[in-house]
Length: 441
View 1 (cartoon, one colour):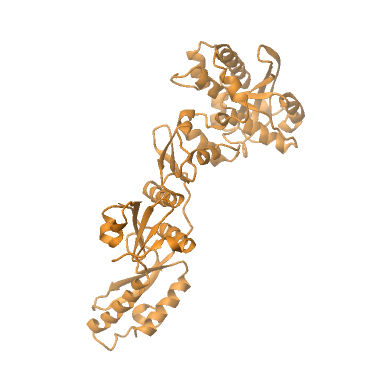
View 2 (cartoon, one colour):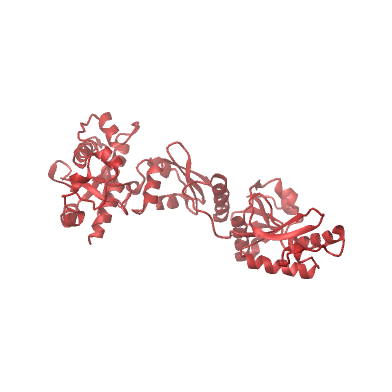
C-alpha cells in the first residue's frame, strides 16, 4: 500500500474561507519513506496575528511564494492513488480537497487518521494531540506547528503505530468505508458504538459535558453518524465537529415521541448549535385583560412568553378576522376590542358585569373549539391534549386508564406545552385519525 502523509498550516480553522500557508507531504510505502514535498504557499489573504504567533509564518514570508493554484496539479498527482494520512485527517483533507476543487481537480482517495489509529493501538492515553502523543510515545518533535516539523513527527507516529498494531487495526480501518475515519477528532468511537438502532433523542457534549446540540432520530446510530459523513467546509460545521467530545441519548418509543422530546429538550436547554424551530410557530395571540373601569377587553398582539393566550394565530390578519367575528356575534364593543380606530372610546351601554359576561361567552366559544383527546402512536405511547394544549405522554398498557383525563395524567409524564409540539400532534392526528381517541374530561 502507498501512503501520502500530510500536514498543512492555514490562515483559519475552516476551508471555505481559509487559505493554506504551508504544505508538507511525505510519500511512504508502509515500510519506509519514498519522497518529500514541502513549500510555503501564498494564501492571497492576510495571515491573522494569532496564526503568526502560533506558526511563526508571516505575510512577508509567503509574499513571494506560489499560490495554491500554481501547485495544484503537482499536489493532485502526489496524492492520487495513495491513502491520505494526517493527524486529525478530516481537517487537512477538507482544506486540500476544497482548494484542489477550486483549481479544477477532484480529490477522492481513502483516508487514515493517526488520531483514530493511535486510539486503537495505544488505548487509554491521557491525550491524543500530536504534541502530547509524541511526548507519551517518546517521539522527537521539532519545529512544532510548522508543516514540515509536524509531518516528520506524524510519519514517526505512523511507523510506531504500524509496528505496534498487533490486532491489525490499520487494515480494519482501510476495509470498506470505515465510519471511524469520519468521526470528530475528540470523539471516542465507543460513544458511537453504544448507540442503538432505536428511535430517540441524542445529545452532543463538549469537553466539559455541556450540551452543544440536540437531535431526534428514527435510528440513533445512523443519524448520529450522518453528522460526520461529509466534509462540509463551512466554519459552523468545522467548529461544531471540533467541539464534540461525547454523545448521550434517550430511547423513545416512536418517531413522534422522539420529535416531541427533542422539542422539549431544545427549549429547556437551548443548545448553541440548535436553530430555532420555526415550523408550527404561532406569531400572534388573542389576550384579555380588565381595564380600570372593570370592563374586559380583548386584543391581539405578538406572542408573549409568560402570558397565556386565549387563542393563537400564524398571521395577524387571521386573528383580526376572528376577533371581528366575535365582536359581531357576541355584540362586543369594537373600541374595547381594538377593532375600531376611533380615538375616543365610549363605554358600552351596559354595565361592566353584563358586558363581561358576553366577553366570557365569546372566550368560552373559542376554548370549546380546542379539543381534548388522546393520541396513541404505533408503540402504544399515549399523548394527551387537553383543551388544545399538550399535557404529556407515556406508555400506557391498561386501557381502563383512558376513562378520564385525570386518570391518564397520573400515569403519563408531564411536559411543557409549545406551539411546535401542538402542530406535530395535530398533523399526526390528521394523518392517522384511527389513532385519535376521545376521553372523558
